[in-house]
Image 1 (cartoon, one colour):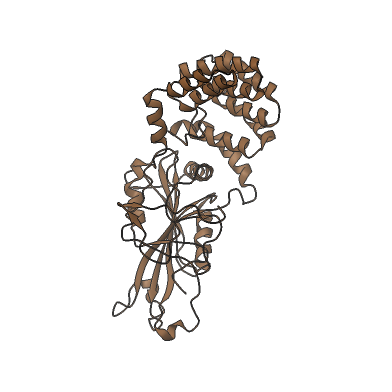
Image 2 (cartoon, helix red, strand yellow):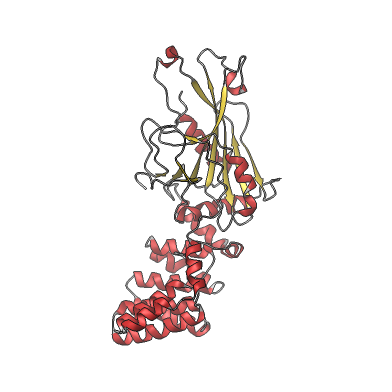
Length: 413
């Protein structure tokens, strides 16, 4: 066997678990993508059969290294999901040339695996240790808290980790090397599970802070991503069945209900729910902004006047939200008030611009020091769905002023 896994690019030589553990207390919002670390042992063909598993042999013939990559999109319904994923990687290990041993080639064995999935709701990192196939050892699972201590996993933690993994897969992917983006909701019943968990645990979203700024509707990330997914994926009937039941406990959902009606070609219904919401909460800037957007889509002078009034009220209530000012400028343009539109684009306070720029900064997700890390590139290339830097070969990662260079999304993303 070679050191590579079919279709998967891995990083080598950095202490990923230590870096992740040390950063646990700094994770924000939904936290980092999942981490999969494999321990691989290299030995000459003449080394003993048990040398790889032991990690050493007489004369130092065996060398054990840590290989790892990041994952989004895996349905962590329990420890077995992580075990199946890691064992699938073990079975996909590339075979070397059949006569490589004649020329001093090394034989690589995967001797252990660890899969980590962060539960953003309880702020616990769920970790599953997977022994190699045929081992007498059984997989074990535990949680690691922000202090680095082990905790016993509960059913709530497993459900929190599963829901967190679903939500992270719906976000724009972080720019990290070795990120494997798996297709979402491929397991039968996975979408139904996601809807059931999100609706039942909707109140847990209050424990989260922040979220992707381009998705925010003035709510917590669970609301933003769950409701936004139902509407963006055009599961409109499901959205209009599920979301109204959440509106009484979380009024911000009304914005996504209105968007669902708009996508169904029912702008009147969208305006009706927004007007009712505005009567109940007249100082909700997100509702007024959505109302202005719906009215602007009608492209009539009377609707543009009402949209401008709603947008003006929205920016007075929430002046720090940049996109509210953009909508106000669009309303002025429909009315032919070009000067007012330019004034609106230049009117946001400095805090709105700073917040918009800060939102694009990468959060701390516990990346290790890549200065001495290397990368594997499978002979058959990287499978579609993998987000990764594209190195020229197996070698030291390119560096620029101490920062990783991002070479773009992988093929098929």
